[in-house]
Length: 82
Image 1: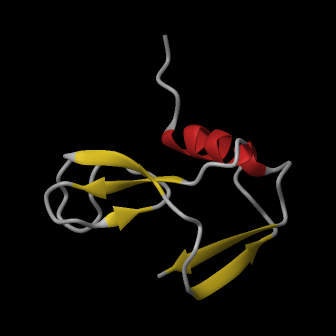
Image 2: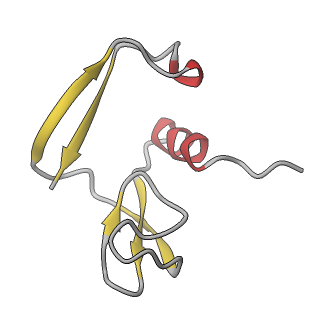
Image 3: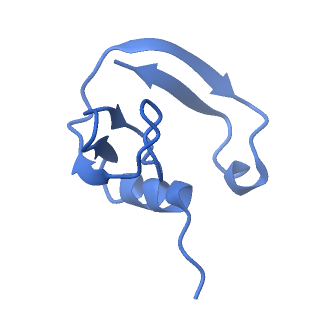
């Protein structure tokens, strides 16, 4: 059986109204979308957390030419949120 991709799981959760990320139990870094390892310290000791959906947008871009698995979603926005 093939493991469900992190991106597919993330998008499925969003469609169900859930914003799921993860938190590194080593350094406390919070990441969205979820990752397999921490972007800050590189450890894989992560826990899944549900986020509130509130934050401050630092920067965003509109994706008009997406990767193949997102072609039916374009255009869409990607943002860095604090």
